[in-house]
Length: 211
Image (cartoon, rainbow, N blue to C red; front, top):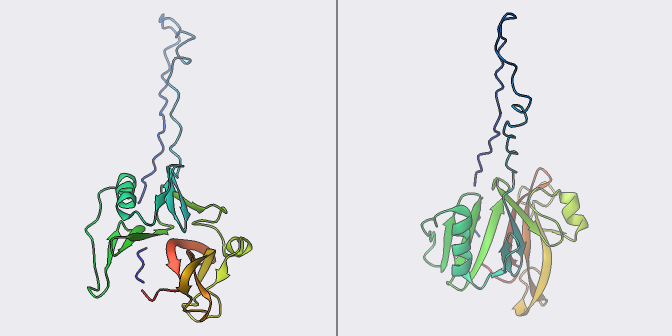
């Protein structure tokens, strides 16, 4: 499955205080004691994360809102437009598969047959806090993910250490696992580990589909 890996420009407002010294012989009146009190207080710097996206195998919710189901592609895409900006042009790399991709850069969506949607969030998506109900999310460590129940998955570079973990497993009745023949299939959240930290998080993963 193809995976696609918002930048927030943070700024800090600073105040420049100008002072002037009057000659000792000046007859000008002293400044009013209230002048400094009347000076405006600098606004606090904006926080790094402006929105929180809660992710599960069922879908996402944004800033504590209602669940946007993986079975509601259009509603989810519309919400992402509000969050990330205009919807990208759809891409269908392989016409043999009815899968359409929408790529916002560090956030991407794949829609299968117009009936289901899965999302991938990368840690370059500044301005977003992306987290699961168990507290694991982008930026969590491998150790933290494993302690929360994650299981080792694909070792992409063959160094003996899994580069992908799976978490929040749920059995799907009527499916058969391709990884564990004869057993019921499961769906889960996939975590991509880079330098022992969760660098990508995807919902919609499973072990019973060959797409």
